[in-house]
Amino acid sequence: MIISAFGVADTDAVIKLWQVCDLVRAWNDPQKDIDRKMTDRNGAFWVGRVGGDIMASVMIGYDGHRGSINYLAIDPAFKGQGYGRQLMQQAETFLISIGCPKISFCVRRDNEPVVQFYDALGYKPDDVFFFGKRLIPDD
Image (cartoon, rainbow, N blue to C red; front, top):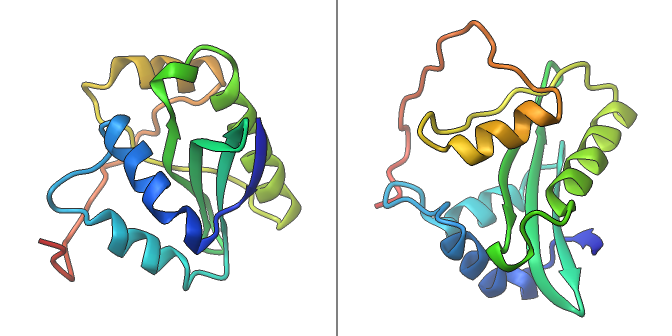
């Protein structure tokens, strides 16, 4: 897999990937999420390619206190081949390089395969409540 920065020309392929990976929700417009990420100067947005085709993605954030991971997606045809691990290792290296001391992110409780994936990478649930409030509706 070759990892590179997301480009606007990648938009349709990335949204299709997120749909195939069941990451798109009615309340999160993927195009708006991409547009918002493109204004972010404190993180990264990468795609992974095999044979020139996009088969992976990850959005990385950093707020000065902790890093975050969003839209980590691996095309189901490529799962179990180490690509998710490779993306996470590169994301961790990137965050360390900009001085980030910790990563926090959300995983849906019923997504057991993803919970197991992160557990195998050494991530553990934090003893916190996750709060949210929609400020701008996407739907």
